Structures are given as structure tokens and as C-alpha cells.
Length: 255
Image 1 (tube, rainbow, N blue to C red):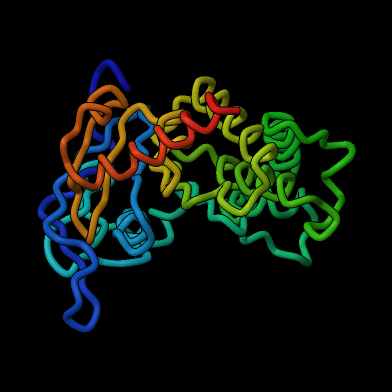
Image 2 (image 1 turned 30 degrees about the vertical axis):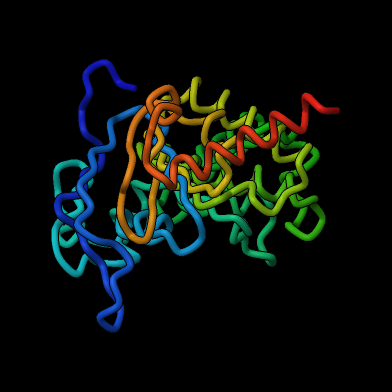
């Protein structure tokens, strides 16, 4: 976490509902510059809703979401999203764009000079472990799932956004590729120091990547703290996730 503890994103009494059905209730949360906050929870707990409120894909029913001390309702949505990298499970790459064109998309929209875009594309591909000479001119269908996910991360980082949102980015991958990308992400976070909000339902992933863990349950943030603090939580939902972790450890010991 940043030693200055400057707030990058803040939720103030935020609720969100659709057709009078609450998806998020009275969320108060400060996310600090340079930290990796993991939002952990079951499907439907409000994790992805929380992410989408940060980059203006959703607007609060009540309360305020502040990015850079400015409410998302006062941001131009396009300018806001260009300050925020967004990585989803299926990468969202454009199939008719080459890998270079996909990674360089936001810099192109920002009217960067062509040579600067190419340099940045090559830099980003190298950063995520894909040789530019080998991959830049390929198309997404010519890559494996893990390689496409790396391209998704490279694209999200290309315009050097201060904030990175990641919505179960490694959830669809096989366990070996998933571990490799978790390790790659951990390295990138150490190198770049971005503010990261990362959604997962996997407690092992949360423990591996988090500086802090926020546990979501039925639209509420019910626990927030470090791994050590989470281990000592008495909340039933935290206990349920810890039981999954303990079961996995017991299985390893038996075998």
C-alpha cells in the first residue's frame, strides 16, 4: 500500500438497485493508491457491480463514487474510462484486429504518434511475456486462452492508466496457466505500482495477490483487511471461505 495512503477510489454510502432489487447496499470503502484490493465473494455478491460503478458503466442509485476526488457523475465517461484499465475474463479482444492493434487501441484513440504507439505496444507485450516479433501481427484466434489473457492485460496497461480493474481475469484458464498469470500479475504489480481492484471467488487467488481483501456478501461489504486479519475474522461468510482453503490444504497433506 502507498506510504502516503492517498485515496484513489472512494465509495461513500453507495447503493445500487435494479427494479427495486438491491445489488449493493450502503457501501463505504476507500481504496488507496498503489494497493491491490481483492474483492472476494460468491456469484451475485456485488463484486462486479462494485467494479462497474468505478468506471461509470453503472451509476449509483444513491451515494457517491469518487475517482481522483471527483464523483463519477461529474466525470466525462469516456475520459474516465481512459484513465482506468479494465480486464475481464474473456479479454474482450477485437477478433479482426491484430494483437498490436488491440494493445494500441487506447493510445490510438488518444492520438499518440504512430511510432510512440508501436514502441508502447512492443514494451507492453514484452512486459507480459509475449515476444512482439512473434505475436504482434497475429490475431486473437491464433493465440491460446492464456496468451489472449496476457494481451488483455497489456491492452489495459497500454495508456498507462493509474487504476486497473480486473474482473475474474484468470477464472476460465486451466490451473497451471492460471498460476503462471497470477505470478506474472504479482510481478507487474510490484514493477508498476498501479491501484488494482481485482474480483475473484477464489480465496487462494485472493490470498496470493491481495494487499487487502474485501469480502462481499449479498450486496454488503462484510469484511475488509489484510490476509492476517481475514484469517481471524469471525464472520460466517469469511469462515466459509476459510473452510475451502483449509480443505484444500488437508487434501494436499493426505496426498
